[in-house]
Length: 476
Image 1: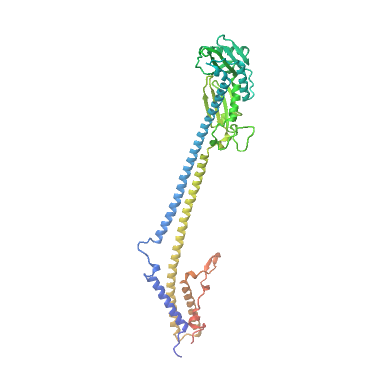
Image 2: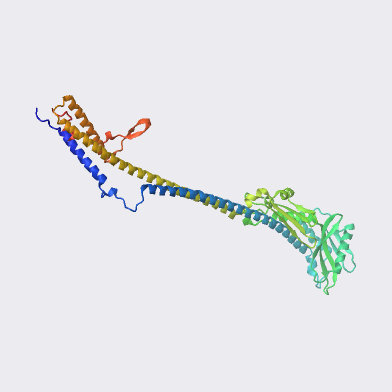
């Protein structure tokens, strides 16, 4: 028998495997490869990972700290706004009381001037004094404009300074007329040509009365008569205050935020009336009640926003108490306070979202960095595995060639040697496929419902077909 000949497929496989082994060794040891260069100043992957994790942790801590600070500041701002609104509501309660009292007294002054205009118009001039009937007519017209006044003491008078006699009309009769005469007669010693019209208080039978008067002087400055009218104070004040309360907006229009209603008989949607916002009570200096709104006692006792104003007059003055109704508080908070509250909350939400986005971006960057480091580590691992497997395969094929040269091999042993060569070729193909990792995208089911890369399904040329044609056993 002649010297056995090495199979063509085995020679080609050994040569190809040695080329792979040399290339793998060169790639692992060549420091000049661009993909493996490392600058001396570059941080290590572990250091970069720790740095990114520290940045993420710091960002999260900063997010929590900033949100905590902003929340505390927003709460402080909210408390300050509520306190400012509370002070504002209390201030405007007092303001509403002063407005009501001042307007009531102003209207009384205008009414007194209108009724006594004939007296002041002829006083100190070369003109005859007016008749009491003229004053009475003007007074009846003025009080009729206020509304129904059930005051039996309402009356008009004319006191002659020369004789001291009293001419009375309507309620100025009987003992009440005598008391009014005595009170007015005492004024004759104090009035001068420059004395203006005035008002004095009168107590009679437990009730408070007001007496409005105006002196009349002749052309030489001598007092001739005193004209005036008297009324029960609480009855006329209640009618006047009710009218003012209905007609005058006691809070600024911009403060309430909606337009006011000036006619309570025709209330439109969106209109605000004093009665829906305020509760009022007017008393005199002695605490006697002159007028109050509905539920005034309850609201004044329970409201947190109350004001009290004392308005002095010659008749003793009045005390006006005002309070915000509890249901009116939400609609009376100034719009600027509401806007500040809304923008504070929006700013807090926007800042929270911004910090959360920054934290998520930092966390995503760390995860991408970790994925990149893992991919690089796997690439290095694959390179090392290829190098070691190529070394082992080279040894296996070399020993297979040496065994094939033995003359003592039987046919069964040669078949087994062919199987060894075939499996070595299969491993060589797997190693070659690892060089193109981006093509390893075929996933197949694995244990426990997992997935793995199927290296056998990638499209590669058959090395047996490439180097030896059809697969067959080497000749004996």
